[in-house]
Length: 232
Image 1 (tube, one colour):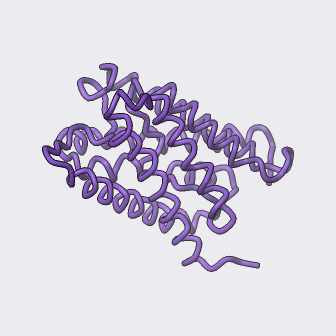
Image 2 (cartoon, one colour):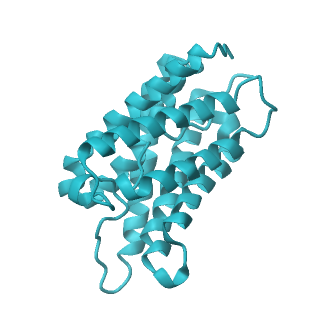
């Protein structure tokens, strides 16, 4: 049975909201208190869990992209109709912005609130580890490419059905473990946009990289997967 477009778009919006609210929320709240012991490992796990849980919850409705780079990569791989790409990207960005707004209003309810980095992505002096623009560009392209390969491979006919969200969630966790020190990990233009809008200034000035690099990486991942010959 064909799922109505509006239901698919609503599922993408809710899924992207959860990814940003859960993943960035863990960085904004729990990781801000060292005594809680979450650290960047906990943030990486939180991002993985958001995708895993929403892939099971609404993946059967929308495909569970929650990320413009994923949607583009699936189009390139022939797994997703190009006509749906722009509507998906629009609702993904909306979901991320609404999640960032919710995080902002919750965080600002604490006395002495300071916005700080607000889990935004950056390079140079705004990279957690001080990594350059070139380092940020390369890691975001590579990790998004591999993320698409994980998604395409785990959802293909060659693997047992029902386990894809586990592989995808663990893959995103690994990606964050690698990239948090470099860029605070994007691999998702929608996630980057929501946080940057509230941080403003430098985050908006550097946002271009966190659109271009993941989209390029996603497209390359789709092309690489086509080389393997999976026509699902």
